[in-house]
Length: 94
Image (cartoon, rainbow, N blue to C red; front, top):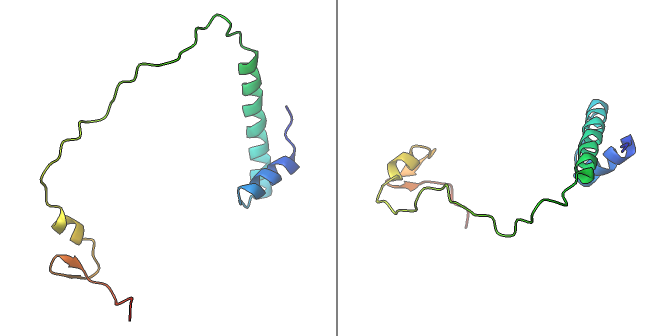
């Protein structure tokens, strides 16, 4: 499938992107390759592939175990100004 420069400009406008002329050509070529690949996938024979309704899911996350740690001092190292255990900022409400 051929992608035109005008279509790339339309997509860029919708995405609120400002593209150079080189980028427009680069993305036009990339979009064409993507659509060609999708075309190949659509031609694939999947008639003998069983449906996968409920895949087995294994969590690869660590267990959520609460820990007592005090990160106050470490966090306050990033404060431009502090007072005791608090960030000190300019008054924002009069």
